[in-house]
Image (cartoon, rainbow, N blue to C red):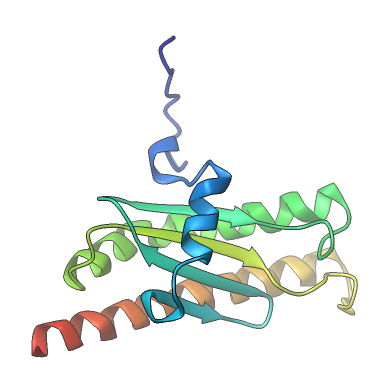
Length: 151
């Protein structure tokens, strides 16, 4: 059976996503010294070197976002933040001499705890936080590439 790949002008192709639970487990079970970790107020990112391409995956649990609407919103925001910077991440990984990366993004705080003026303020806050997290990850990769060039 052939896999049909739909063309989405702004989407992330299947080949750039982690789809199997084993891929997520592989990243999270790496020894800490082989992981690249970043965190922001709402999100965390764990990356590890694997295979020959950059893949990302999202995890938003029911514990932190009890409503499906909330989980879907968070996934859309994380996907967008990563998609906008995907080529920069791939370039930075190449410069850091990493063959490929598996990047796992997840919601780390409960949305129930938050006191928001409304849905709009929640969206803005999450967008800013997700963008800041991916930018922080890019900075870590760039620092790693500088250290690699020095050695």
